[in-house]
Length: 496
Ligand SMILES: [Zn+2]
Image (cartoon, rainbow, N blue to C red; front, top):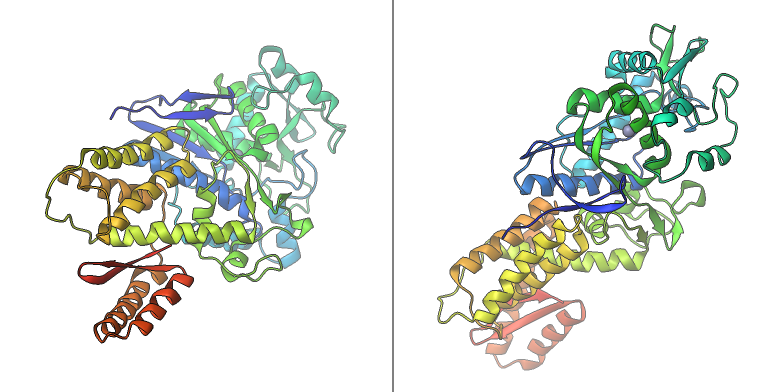
């Protein structure tokens, strides 16, 4: 099955065939979190989406170097180079060292990623660990004539850059429009142009995190770290650069400008951006009180939640939408995801011990159908990592597997080769590509309990106590469990 992977590229606004720079290898850079508070759900969604992309590329056999940074300095409260450094501000409030804040929230972030079963990146560099590289980058941009120094700060000259380059290439906007829509912000007296941004910022004596530089004591501008670290670990040009959609207009636009100014090349060939979260159709935001922290979702301790959900249910819920679509949180939607997830998860559990029955005759139509569902898993993921479609394909396989396991299938047999392919495809996609797990509560306890109930019911039937046997059957059905009767009696169950 020869298939090509297609990726939506934000830079060209087109779905393009994915062709890595070095065959067999992929370099991917994703903008990581600023570690000054609990990781918010929008970030989790973004990193789960890139985990899916990373996992699929690995599944296809690529050797992937996945770099995701930790921003631990230089990210100011506003993208317009004004306000306090987020980490420093929190350190002052908590009366701690900035690095204590960084340590605490980095550990928390890793824990949350682990709970969501997101694989760690290959390299996780920090901004404070790459001050020298950032200073070198500023020097190169100055030497190339695209930056200027004013009283200990260095700014990028957007107007100069725009003479030969399209500054708005990523966000698709014209320079005049951007100029007209930009308010005058802090540091404006020093900046030559309204769109100029800081590469290096002079630190006031009281600023907690500052380093010596050729321009005096200061700290790097936020956009600089990603250019410096992607250059260092992936080279001047690599394959994929990603992040949340909110990073596109400023952070990524400025990153591209920095890279072109210093090295003459757009750093990545494919730019991938994840969409935002909403709650009951409204933009999710802290100020509206409709945003959730991961632990609030797990415990259900939030005014808008009627119960808690497991991390795999939330991961599954995210995967039900393409990464380019918004995800809307509502109790009903997560409840539906929970039921769907449990169905597929039980199939994954059952599949481990499923053996093929003695083959009587192959039904070609069924055999072809199963192979089509397996192909669909790849077609869907190759279509810009379309996880909702992949879940549909798995659901089709799951239906057949369940009826096969319960020996109630109406359709015919499949070849041993197709049987093995189906098992492998389902397992590969459920566990390795989608990164789902069979959670403890579903791994065996439910089945053990159900086997006990099935035994009691079979005993009731054997004793001709049909009233009890029917009561058990109907009672289970009302809470979503269907018993499967066959010639040997009742031996299996499915969630409906
Ligand atoms: Zn970045």
